[in-house]
Length: 466
Image (cartoon, rainbow, N blue to C red; front, side, top):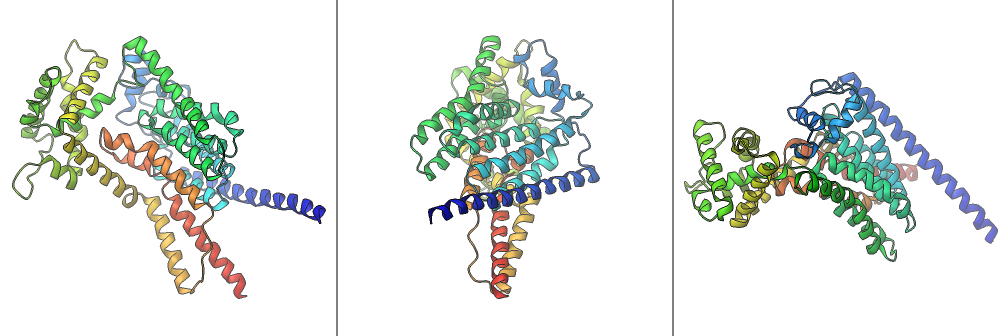
């Protein structure tokens, strides 16, 4: 009796490996089809964005740590023959890295115990995400940062397989996640959410010392930030990945300003607040940025506009930032000092009027959430497939649909991804479309997984009906 059980176990494992191989081969076939479609459509043609020059300027600067942009992307892109005006082989390299990262996410999900359907759903969502389709061809750090973060997720999921795996995957996770937020500082929340993801998988398995290991993982993932920021503190007197956050946040604070608020600023930032308000009012009078509209009571209410008409501020944000606020830098003021002054001004504005900041967060979150669905072509296709599957199941009078394979794991991974990529875009600036696409990259995995469950249920019922 016991001998029969022992022989059955290897057969089951071999069958499982063969089944996994089929899924992986199917995934690779989808990769090839997607790559062929990209080449055929010309979407892999290079593109230079307005921000591109800043990354190459930082890489070429004699003072690396005082530039507004981080030099890493400029260095890496230069290795593939790119310059500020020519993308070289960078789009191809970014496409290859994205494919590898998508496959890595599939492998990591399987290693963590997520079912084949759930793992494939994450892979498919990652591979053909709107973020990838739009960002891979561009000479910007968004695409490689997303790919590195996916590899960080893959390594974290692989580490979650068992207690002993953390030691093996700790350094790869640290390198991948560190590269991701050095390329895109907005990904800095990733260590928190990846540690939480690791803890969630460990607690689901009732594994001892899970929280202690999650803290170790967090410490490793945040280490590149601490080391690099320490180097910048010594070189430029600023502890951060790059001196840009204060400048980026200042347009949000500038939109919040009123004459009454300016009088409440502390002495250290009152002159800055007065200058920003004056420059904003002049730009509004000239028509270069949109003025806060009247509400139903005939008053110009920032709170009302931020909650109900946030796109007014979203469309004018870059014009305000790069056409008005950047002119506030003094001739003898370094960029690091200017960014620090804008950060102090922005934080004071938030502290003076928390309700206005809360309204901004609510409006930005509404924009983020809505656009993650209604302007996300991949999400709409996945939802359409799900709706069609449900309708077909109703028409066939299908009975009980089989449980979705790994839906819980898909939800955990998707939630951690959104947490790693979205918060800073609503807390300190506005969610531009490329940031929204990045945050929504894995969201279609949920309807894809549900659709697969319906298809499998219908197939099972068809077999029973024969």
